Length: 339
Image (tube, rainbow, N blue to C red; front, top):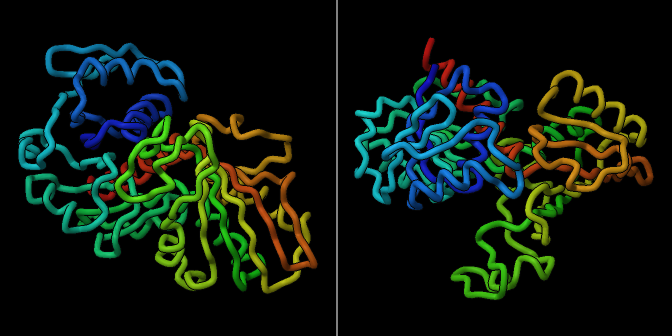
């Protein structure tokens, strides 16, 4: 059993806690503390009720300065500074960093210096962290001696297994990804100021909005042979959850639509079971809400032009799928350190 704390209790932090209880991770992982700048009553309320994922499966209430979830008592902190919490006294094995505020070793190190033994980041990180992990692809690279690890991004977790699969099947000459992503909390409901991106001043519910993406960096880090061959763009769309990546690649070998679909269906039942899914049903995005897999290939949308131009539609729940992968990484890392 590993003891963890959650730092930042927004969309991913709350999804991580819910997934821990819904999907069996509680057998191996115990959350002993949550650090979130909001008040405890609001935290309790947002844990109990969620517009995207529904009601929490267990009773949730406030008890003093703690959050009670079922039979578990989770200490509550509301501190902005890393050294304001006595992390050593909490005796945690790992901090799940879900605030999205840390991407470099320098910034994450302040928590290590403050007494946190290990830190798992819920966002892409710079190359100076110990490892960037896409569970199901390269978790074997985690070492018990690592202190700062990134679980990459939801889009990286989606596309890496797909690109690896195509590379193994037919080789990839070059390609593009177009991420079609649900709205996020850095967007306003109505037009408002944004310090970094003029497009993000516009209402999230009124427009399809182009945004920057770091997906190409993730591909380059994890699949370096493809790093210079894949260009990436992203759009935000007016939905609250579930996203997709429209992938187009030119393969080295001639393939057929049937060959591509059969291959991905076999991966969904074998090597990438519970990580990659495959479907031939006529779906809309909402059908994948609360789907714990990293990616689902929509076989009805697979196209092959002239034998080598392959187009795939890859669905993913950008909250729930990612939260489950983060817990997979935490569980795997925890088993390493407990040996």
